Each structure stands twice: as C-alpha cells, then as structure tokens.
Length: 128
Image 1 (tube, helix red, strand yellow):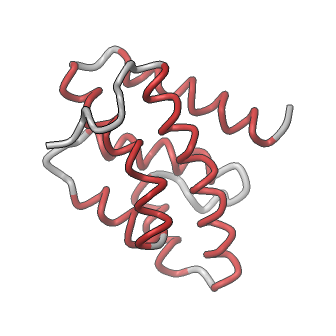
Image 2: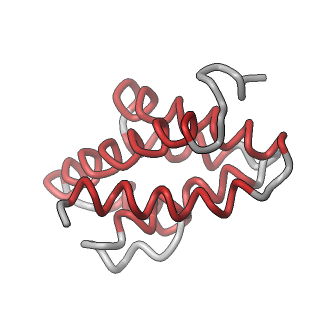
C-alpha cells in the first residue's frame, strides 16, 4: 500500500466518526477540513493548527485535529492527539517542522476531498 493510500484509508475510516454526528457538526468539520490545506499554505502549520484549536465553540474541530494527529503519529510517536500535535509544531527543529508541514498538508488534502464526497458537504457550506 502506498503512502497516499494509507493517508486516504485512515482519513476515510476516521470520517466514519463524523458521519453519525448531527448535521451541524458535519458541516463545521467539513468546512474546516476544506479550509485547512489553504490555512496551512498561507499561515503555516503552527498557526493553522492553533487557529483550528481556538475554535473551542465547535468541539468537533478538536476531532479534526485528533484525526490529523493520528496521521502524523505514523512516523512521530510523540504526537498522541491534537494538543500534542500543536505542541510538536511549536517545538520541533526546522527540518522536522518542514516535514510535518508537508505531511500535514498531504493528509489535509484527503480530509478536504473526502468531506465533500463522503459527508456530502460542498465547499463553503460549513462557513458561518
């Protein structure tokens, strides 16, 4: 199985936890999942992660961070959950930060795509 297949398979499985949630939660999860790749590219990984984390009024967004953390945990066991992912992004050296950014971006693209196809949420539908 290729790395892209592994990313896609894990993201698909994780979306199962979102499918059964109320529509409002699905909309917020999908909306942020679709924004996340752009946020990472424009603001950088650390700021993008903390932006998502700051949206504490939507607990389902913490689930998105936990899902992304599980993706990065494949090669960095120090990333236990979304909070640990934010911590690692703040504290690692530059080479590791660049790797984390590339990996998070590759994974975030899967969440963005699958939120449309599997959750049925079109781009922009989850915005306030």
